[in-house]
Image (cartoon, rainbow, N blue to C red; front, side, top):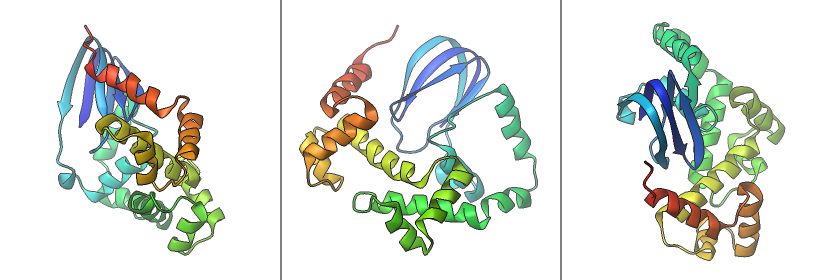
Length: 213
C-alpha cells in the first residue's frame, strides 16, 4: 500500500514505529506489516494498493531492502523516485543485479526463513559461503545497517506481531521464537524496545481500540 499525501499532516504506525507525514509526502506499507493511522490533520491523501506479484522484481528488491529504515520521504525524495521510473530498465537492473545487492537479498531471505533457529551472523555467513566480516561490511554498505541488526529486527518484529495479533503468553512466544529461557527473552525484549512484553501488548491494545477524533 502506497500512501501519497498532497497536503496536511498525518501520523501512521508501521510495524509499531511512528511515521509522520507532513505536506507532500509518500509512505509505503509492505505485506504483513502492522499499520494504523493515528492522526489526521486536514490531510489529503491517495492510497494505491498494488498486488506484490505485479511489481517487477527489481522494484520489489529495492523496496524490501529499505522497508525498515526509509518508509517516509518528502517532496524531493518523491521527485527522485518518479525520476527513477523514467530510467531505462537496464540501469535499475544494474544496481539490483550487482553481486553485493544479490548477496544482501539472499541474506535477508535466509533470515526470514530461519530466524527462529539461527540467530548468529557467522551461521548465516557460513550458509552464504562468505566470512562474517564480509557479510557485515556488505550489509552496511548496501542498506546502511550491520548484519546483526536484521536478525534482531526480524525477531523483535515477530514478537511484536504475536503480542498484537494473538493471545499467546510471553513464555509461549519466547519458545515459538526459539528461546528456551523465556526470562532471557523477556530481558532481550525490554532491552531493545524499552518496555516489558505485557506493557507493549497493553499499550498497543489501547491504540488499536481507541477512537481518534
